[in-house]
Amino acid sequence: MFNHVMVGAKDIDESKVFYDAVLGALGIAPGVKDSEVRCRYHGNGGVFMIKIPINGEPASNGNGSTIGFAAKDSAAVDAWHASGVANGGTTCEDPPGTRANGVYLAYLRDPAGNKVCAAHRKG
Image 1 (cartoon, rainbow, N blue to C red):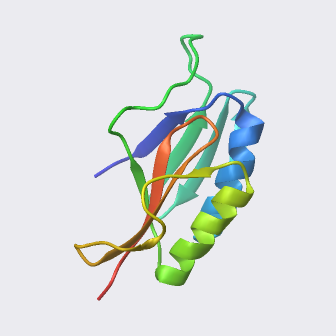
Image 2: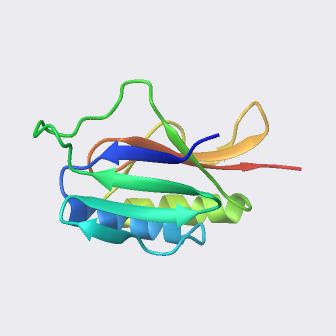
């Protein structure tokens, strides 16, 4: 359905450290900076990008927006969460765990405040 997803970043290098860690925990290769203002990650047919906003305004998170990354199992979700906290992210919502819908989830805010999650759908 999607070609790519892009979120704003305040500092590309700081955000790259965070996303290299959390996406690396999901088996995605480190990001490629194709300029001083953008970095991209390739995986499973799509591209995830971080970018300094082109309009010169500060990056801001979308209220109510979440980018969800698929994980192969709950251990990968836990590794994703731990690596994010260790690399500049902040935990948000409930601790990692199974929600009422049977999905194992963890949520973080990246260094720019964007809300991201890792999810594993059991069975």
